[in-house]
Image (cartoon, rainbow, N blue to C red; front, side, top):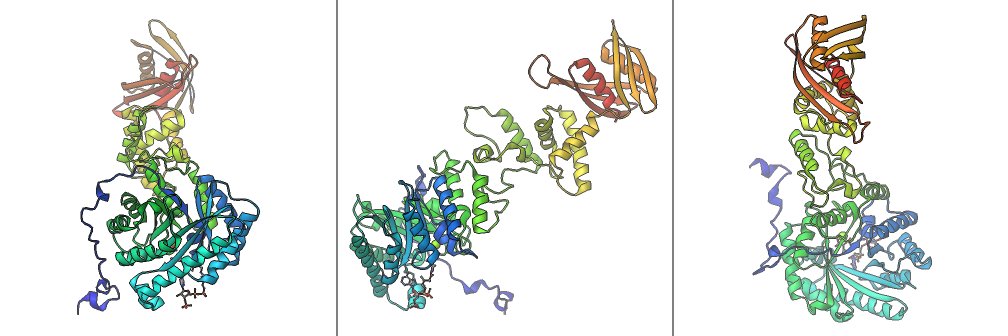
Length: 547
Ligand SMILES: CC(=O)SCCNC(=O)CCNC(=O)[C@H](O)C(C)(C)COP(=O)(O)OP(=O)(O)OC[C@H]1O[C@@H](n2cnc3c(N)ncnc32)[C@H](O)[C@@H]1OP(=O)(O)O
Ligand SMILES: CC(C)C(=O)C(=O)O
Ligand SMILES: [Mg+2]
């Protein structure tokens, strides 16, 4: 016996999902052009998967959040199953809390008593959507319901009839109907079509009054292309096509729900059901926030507003009592952050080259973090995997300094040693402190005052731990005269090899930043200083290099 056969970890237990025979499939050559009709099922599918289902107050807050984001269809619960869901529907209706442009929906099984109770929950609604489901896959027919296809179809038809009857009895409401052959993706396509046609024959939809046929991947079982094939096949066959809004409801068991939804849209899906952050049964529902942001990143208006993503994620996470993964696309704490040197370098260069009117083109940042309320501060964080660009970026952000390349290289080595010594990330604050200590703060000598007599004779007053020092020297420039004086005082040769300066801000009283690399008795030293006066800045930079 092989190891695989005796272990519990045995792939022979499973069978591959069969492909769909779909000659000349069209979806691979299409592009998504616009947002689908979104339906949030947070308050139903999301809620039924929670350890502690939502209270009425939480549902109301969640509902308000969904409305604020821009959802026009919201499945508010399963009122025939729970008193909370029933009371929540009553609250929304009786207190007139449903905006005119929002349609609420409820889910009901194909059981007449539960359908009647669902309609009671919706009594008096201006407009409402009733969503009927029953499971249709071979597995469910044979092992859960113990019914043949005809009986499963009869169950759906009975449910559809009960819904029609109840709707006729409540004419004050504008009704819409939705039918889900639950476990559609595991159902033989011809049978899924047959049962949906049977339901349509009861509801008699038209182009003006269409029915929603929702095709769930109740448990995701195959690669997303298979789901797309199933949707395209169904879209080609359902009649009359114009009387049907084709909806999808992907779950995420294989981690592909967003991909499956996107391909399904290419295949003809017009409406998408899902939840925020992908909460839902098992691995969850399709994450609408991610799918909407995917559209957004392609220049398509998602028709949902995620500009305040951090706040949305915080609220959803609180309602669901589920924390957000730091790498959750578009949302997690780390998704706009680069630690690695080459990524930081590319981001820094692309951000610097960005023009206000051009399309977003920043390597390693698929969208502008600002769009979802994030800032550039978090884009670059420094640890031992980082390079010179990352540290230089943070120093530039914090102090407005444009470090010359040779200083970046020098500082990066210091940062590298420090982060390896500490074995962790160096915060921006700590990085700035390290920079100041190393280059910007006088240690041995501090410039107190100086005078220049032309041609280039400098006398300077320095402060040192050992007391006041007076220097005089000559040279072919002020800086040369000063370094000659210092060299004489120290008894060591000083040679300046690099000099760089720039203004810190616009205006006549702007400070100048001055950077100096020098060699003193064969040792390379780097210092910098900022001052209103460029000469003062350069002399102080020389002294700061003796650090
Ligand atoms: C894929 C989905 O997300 S579907 C939605 C699932 N959501 C929920 O189940 C949450 C709310 N559900 C509940 O509170 C309960 O299951 C209720 C109130 C609906 C039903 O409770 P109970 O009557 O105690 O039945 P229970 O849940 O144990 O079993 C379901 C029964 O309904 C039948 N059933 C299941 N789904 C359906 C359906 N869509 N239509 C008709 N009958 C159904 C089952 O065959 C089973 O019948 P049986 O009692 O004759 O064996
Ligand atoms: C009720 C249906 C739409 C469902 O939630 C599913 O199949 O996952
Ligand atoms: Mg579901």
